[in-house]
Amino acid sequence: MDKEEGTWNIEVVGEAIPEEDRTRIEKLPICQREGPDRVIWPYNKDGSYSVRSGYLSMKGSRHVRDGNRASSSHIVSKSTWKQIWKIQAPSKIKNFLWKACQNALATYQNLWKRRCCTTPTCQLCLHQEESVEHLLLCCDWVQKVWFGSSLAYHVDRQSITSFDFWLVGIFEMSSIKALDKMIMQTRVAFICWHIWKARNAATLEKKHLNAEQVIFLAERAASEYMEIKAFKEKGCLEILLFLF
Ligand SMILES: [Zn+2]
Image (cartoon, rainbow, N blue to C red; front, side, top):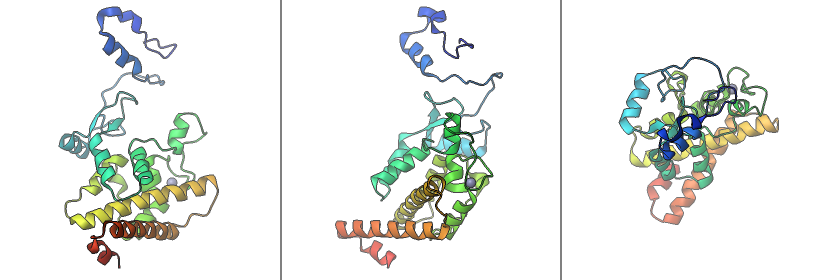
C-alpha cells in the first residue's frame, strides 16, 4: 500500500499473487483516515458484535463481506432483493427500497462522506446524522408517521442496525397471515416512499412537513394500487373486502 498516494502498490507482490486476486485487491477501497488496524464485525454499522446481527447473519447468510464498499459495511444479498421484488408496489418504489438497503440514497450523511455538502446532519431535526435509517425510520417526524399509520408501528431506535435488516425483519414477522402480510408490505413500501418524497420536498424545496398528510397520501396510494391490481387480477376479493 502506498500511504502517501492512498493507492495499492500491487507491483511489490509481483507475480506472487494470481492476476485475479491482484485485481480484487486493487478494487478494495483504502480508508483515508489514519489509525491502527482493528478487528470488526462486518454485520453491524459500528463494527461491534451483537447477538441480533449474529443471529441474522447465520440465519440467512444474507450479508457477505463487501468487495466494493468499506470493509466495515456490507452488501445486501439477492434474497433481500427477491423479497423486495415480491412486494405489491410499483417498480420505482421497489427500486427505491433496494437503493435504501444498499445505502445508495442521497442522504446528508452520504453526501457529506463524498464531500458534496458541508454537514452530515439531518436538516429536519438538526439532532443526528441523516443516515438512511434516520431518514426513513428514526427522525422524530418519521416516527410520528409510522405510529400514526394504519400499521401503528412503534420504531424502536435501539433495535435498528441497518435498513435492510429492519426491512427483512418486518417482512418476516411470522405472526401475520399471508394476505395481511402482503398488504402490510405494500403499506410499508408506500410509507417509505412518501417519507422520502416529503423529506425531499422539505429539504430541497423548503416545503412544510406534515406527518398527517404523508400518512394520508401513502395510505391512499397504497390502497389505490392494491385496488387496481385486484381488479386487474379479477379474483382478489379478499383484498377488496379488507380495504372497504
Ligand atoms: Zn432528523
